[in-house]
Length: 212
View (cartoon, rainbow, N blue to C red):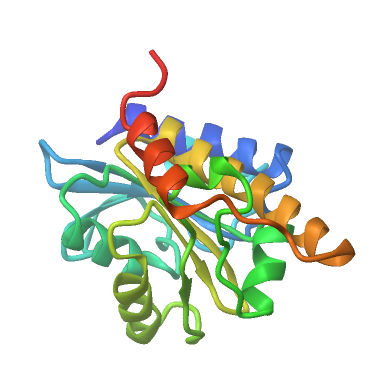
């Protein structure tokens, strides 16, 4: 079985998305790139994460052709392929329907620097214009909007996070959901005071060598 370790991670982090409240049912999708093999493991289309097994995870090449697995890959395979092609440092992609990030996306709001933890994305989280799920237009909107950021809100849809590996990618999605909730809650009671640009640049720089 190709990419056994990465397939297991897709199963594990799919369940973690459910347990962390970042999606429901079969919503959203995850993928991991094996740069050595030029192969991608991606969650299957339309299967509840509680039911996904390692054998259900699909392996495709960089053109999107299935090379191992019997299931259909995620309907959002197109934007996963586009992200890997656009930025060589990306090793994993997580797409969620997390409630607060999606709320902002439905308002067509970017997520500004209301809290320094937005630095998991950069100095903000940009917004990609709406397009039908699974279409080349959506993939194009994501690539144009995400730039060098590690997260992007999809109008009337959800959130996409990227990172060098699945652990860090999931962390981006989780922290951006937290900051989205903080921003939403501050907007309900007043006008939030944002972290200044100079300070955010300092934080982004510190994040580049944060942790172990």
